[in-house]
Amino acid sequence: MASKKAQGLSPEMMVVIALCLLVLIVIAIIFSVRSGVFARSLRSCGSVGGECKSGTDIVNGECVLGQTVQSTDCDDGGKVDSKKCCVTAESIGAKAA
Image 1: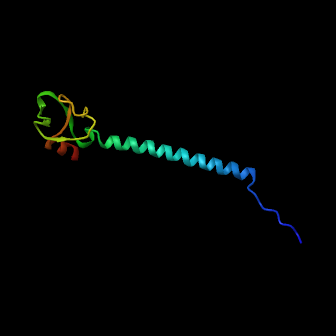
Image 2: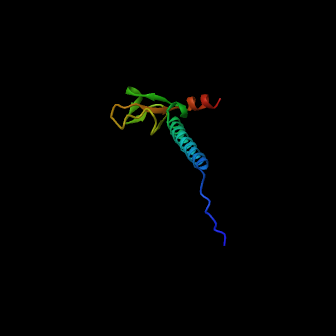
Image 3: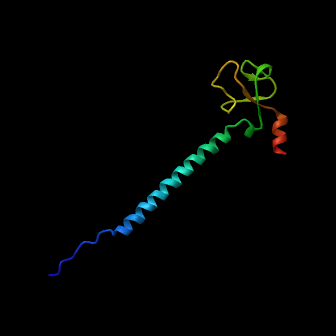
């Protein structure tokens, strides 16, 4: 009776598999970093057509002229004198044009 030897993975195949895994990990890291940059750009005040305002433009934490947009790059963690992102109808119309 002839004996059958089990076939193993060749060293070359192991190197190819390791390189493929490395490439997949690098691609995953690139996409996760890029998605974070994209998410931050969506929260910027300028991306919604607003301006960061403070001082007399803000009363009781809200914009005097226009609508206050929360959770943008203008917010300083809810401090009393923090800047707010104010969006006016004119800035929305200018952005659409």
